[in-house]
Each structure stands twice: as structure tokens, then as C-alpha cells.
Image (cartoon, rainbow, N blue to C red; front, side, top):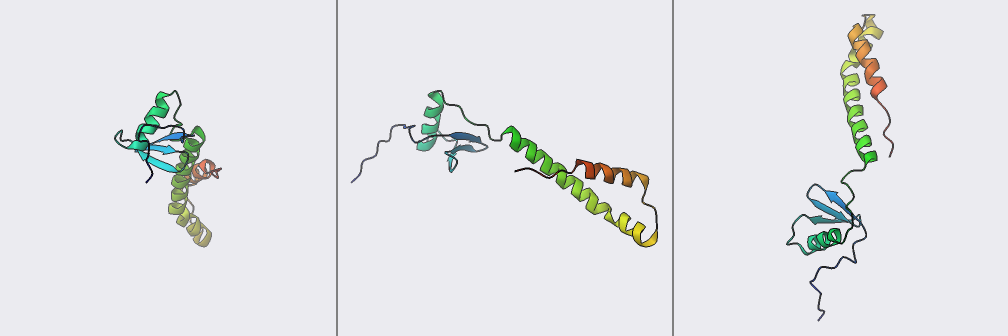
Length: 115
């Protein structure tokens, strides 16, 4: 029968990223923020050794998420006002100036998200 050392061991931790409910260890293992959990105890010991947690989101991820939200909002506005363009094309009824301006702003705000 194997015996396991139940003391904190940090040798297995190569990276640790903060998450909403705990930690992402080594990019694959989700560890709850519960000091009674043996893996969490290891993470806390790893931090106490002077190691630094990576933030939940990098600046690039925050920028990409922000742009994705802007894109979704812009696309929703364009979708909701497409009927003005169809009406203009089919019946020559002018598109209101405020809609034309807002559509131009929505198109300008839209940008492909780089991964």
C-alpha cells in the first residue's frame, strides 16, 4: 500500500492564475479557494514562498473582451436598423439622419477581435 505525504508540497506547481472561485494551477487544474482543500493549501504555501499569482485576465484579454462586447452591441444596433436600409432600397424612403449617423458610429466601433 502506498503512503502519501499529506504535508504541503509546492513542487508540482509551475504556474497559478487567480480565478473568481479559486485558482487555475498549471493551466489545467481548477482549485477551490478553500484552505481545507489540500491543493488549495499547496497553492497558499506556494504564494507564501514568494511566488506571484497571475491575474484572472491579462490586459490583452480584457481589451479583447471589451471589444467583443462593443462588437456585439454594434452588430445588434446594425441588425435592428437594417430595415431602414431595406426600405430605402426598395421604396426610396429616406433613412433618418440620426439613424444614418448612429449606424456609421456602430460600423466605426466594430473591429475584429484578435486572438
